[in-house]
Amino acid sequence: MREDDQLDALFRAYHAACPAPEPGVNFMPQLWQKIESRQNYGFSFRRMANALVTAAVAATICLGVYTTMRHSDTAMYSQSYVEALAENNTIDTDLVAPARLEIDQVSPMN
Amino acid sequence: MLVDFGLIRRAQAGDNAAFNEIVLAYRKRILGTITRVIARPEDVEDVAQEVFLRLYFSLDQLRTAEVFEPWLYRLTVNAAYDYLRKQRRRPEYRMSDLSEQQVLMADAVAGGKVEQDEQYQKKIRESVDSLLGAVSEQDRILLMMKEVEGLSLKELEKIYQVNENALKVRLFRARQRVLKAFGAVKGKEPATTG
Image (cartoon, rainbow over all chains, first blue to last red; front, side, top):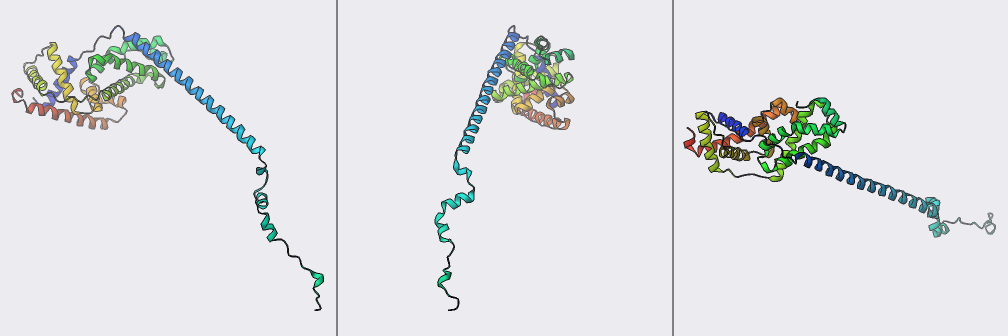
């Protein structure tokens, strides 16, 4: 007999040697217990997730409000960039002050 | 189908009594399949309960009641695979057992009669379990579904959701590995080759 056929015979014998067992009396009660415990776990997980989402939204709103208040209180941000630059560089403006010509001391005929 | 489509639709809609009826109808079949796939009688009920637990929480994902059975088998295959992966049970070839099994098989084939005592069945179970140690957990389950459970390639195609050719190739390779292990044991036991 070929090995292939012998293997098929062995698989058939295995099927016969492993009949389906009768389910125990606790099969259904245990199954429903497991379903309920997983449902409870899922429910508490969802509650925890909802609490976390609520806390995250609240924190975001608080941070938003805080940032907006800081913006409106700071005078620095009411100036433009050029104005702020000019204010910080007053020495430069002296150096480039307009040159005054003393016209009356200089005679054009001389 | 062991149940009608209406019952499945009721269970999908959240009717626990309908789900209970489905479990009662299918549990013996699922217990049998799992018994043969995992070869650990003490854990069979746990794995079967895991199958129905997954079914309960995934019924709403079932598109149509017509594909219920492949869906249930798919859950069975996945639960059995998860169990086997956790066990990571890779038994050594038990040469003494296999040799004895060879004697029994030769007798059975030649004489056309099979002893049905518990000792014989135990040897058969151990022999197949050892031979299937030559393949991965996935291939073990696939071979079991095809060779022992007798599912057709079309049915396996629906369960595994891969095309028939890919399944054929995988089955062929797995079977070749098992045959090699089978042949190796036979080669060591010339008295049983008849």
